[in-house]
Length: 158
Image 1: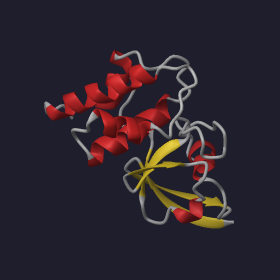
Image 2: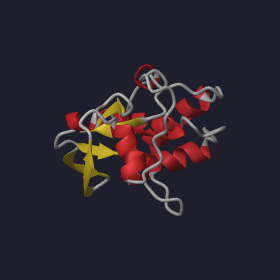
Image 3: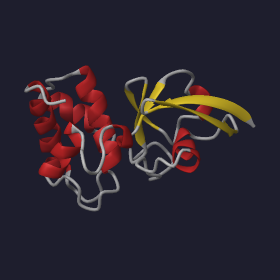
Image 4: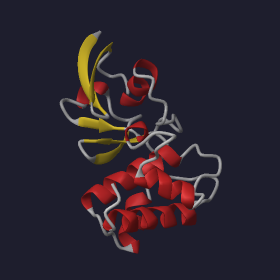
């Protein structure tokens, strides 16, 4: 066991775990943050997507020992049920979730895109969102939600 200090959603946490433990397991099992889902465990679906140092990563593939001092962001850090963040509200408004399993990962991938490219083109949105899969087929609604969030942020919504 090794002790790690993780900076997640603006808070610092200390966890004792094995170095090769996937970040996904630490987030869910040790920190109780269950937004990131276990989908495939192979980095092929994106249900476990979080941000690490601002970049979208599949947390099932990132060992906790590789996190270092980088900031981890999860969907829980973007808003609350009674006060959703801009991206969360855009996904609600566009009814982008059907079963909802992929949505936290989709939102976090979109968050990474909008943090680096506030006014992405359609091609940039599609390219950036491509690694994440929605088995329900709501991809068009998801794309609309990302466009809506970008427009809301451009108008100065926090």
